[in-house]
Image (cartoon, rainbow over all chains, first blue to last red; front, side):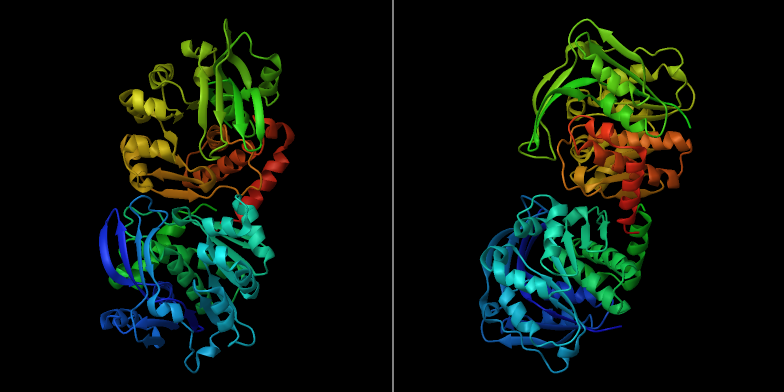
Length: 300
Length: 300
């Protein structure tokens, strides 16, 4: 088992969905990723919050054994995001983004963190992702996420960043946008042409596709009766995927296949409740059970 | 190996898609189904065309070994459908429907056809589907398709028909419409509650889900670089699915799993060219090759 380091956001989300309204609940890419990965590996988190960040939320993340030495508290307010899924459960409509202390985020690595073999650079400015990567030398397994904002406004930095990663995670809309290809197979090939070893295209309720030079792998998503809040599904997927890989500490086709399944299973729990609430209610046994059921439903 | 009987339409389609424009090309549910199934089993086709139906098209269907004794030629014009995929490749916009001789279609079974153990009632008036079924006694494996028009206008007949089938094939939009459930798992459960043994929800480029009392199975679709014309993909899927089952002549989970894969593979060829053109160019060897590649890309 190897340690994972995640660098991203810890936020307060306000979410409207057909299932209800939740104000200033625990969110952020690093939150979802770290909690998901914690079921498989030891996780170190680097992010920044404001002085107003509720102690209770810090305790929630810590309760999963996530190391929070890298969660810096700055004067000011925590990053806030408000989104709505009322029109479309598959696509968040951003109501408001308040970057607050996150606008000045400069990832600061606590001693020892630079040894992590598995690193996930969640959705932050690609220049910051590149800057952060400079702290690491030698062979690492580096995952990276991004979003439409950076594809549009920091395109060449993002491509430079993707070249340096082992695996890029994008959703289908982002993959199409970055590649300029509406066909998802062509989009996947384009992502690989940028230099990463693997490219994962996340398709929400339709599953995920992993592209590599040697093989392409597809998985459906878990079927769910009740989806309350899709926020964080992508980061939770990446957390399960990389968490599992770090646990095996061996990158081969078999482990990549299982990682896709674990990513899917973890994401399925994330969307069943607001914030990370579902993970407060399930045990590893519940997760293993769903993994078994999911595997049984797959055709191959 | 058992024979399959398909009752449906043989039509002349006019299609507009981003890949081009094709006027009065061979189409129809029974055409796509029978050609697809012919790669696995002997197929008997029952449909009606007008006196204007090109002999060349009849020869195309016959070239796949499909028995056309049940293709009745009536005075008048052949069923014509015009559709466009210019706005959305996943959803046809109907420009025009001319039922012509199809409006008076009364399936007439040539002698011997009533012995078929596998029967597919393609998308026709559910009252006609029920009427046709009366010709068969004893145990049969009955597949059935439908569409939004019948869900809306012949709802109770359609439900009566579904109760009599072994397997209902609907696309996700139709499944949601018939069930009144936007959640696809709930929609699938609803379909089963109507009485069929199996319910397949086809999701286009996202694959398919098979629901049954004992198990749920999911498959992604084959990844394709070039999709020219999605018309007939659903019937081609059903043809591959039921053709394979008829070939094995044994309904069990293992065969159902493979049937889902064969259905997906056959559908992938259908959409790569207009009409059934792609099937004129590929051999069983090409199909087997894609099946092998598809299987390799599946995670399980």
